[in-house]
Image (cartoon, rainbow, N blue to C red; front, top):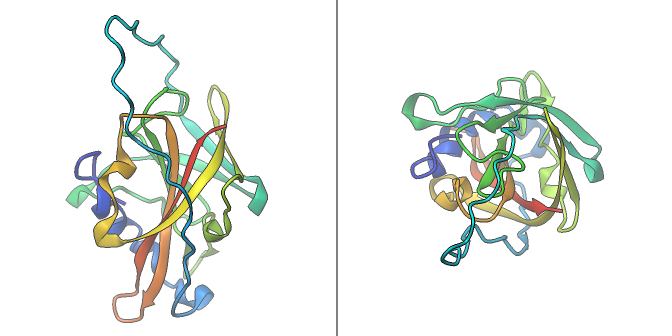
Length: 205
């Protein structure tokens, strides 16, 4: 993964999630049919009316665990940053997920909370987001923080070429959303990378 809101887009998974793909072909095969499900929730937020009071301050929450009940998945979450080449880091352990600390926070009232993770690795086997493509609109996502648990509902699942991941995926403004990102598409035996990024969109329940 990579970048900050404006430039963080495709670079994010171009390199970061590219590493996710290493060894993945052993589990998924040479190609994976990626479903395109549901309607992507908007990131844009209507301008507040004149004289509208500022929203109350909320505690700065830090994600600690992600649960996908429909897939029987529970994985720890650690903060990640944008590193060299403006790439968003991904935890080395495929069973651990990363939360982009430069993005939105759960319960913050606006912006997209970004969670990334390896789909698998040659040593660790299938990762925490290996089954992401099986999510359906309406499935529940639970994000536990140091202040409590936030519930989300999956709205859409989309696959994007790594060079065309929409910048709005990393928006720190607009309506509150959660996105989960990993690798998908066709595995390139030469580059040892997958061609696509798989993105699940969810909104507060």
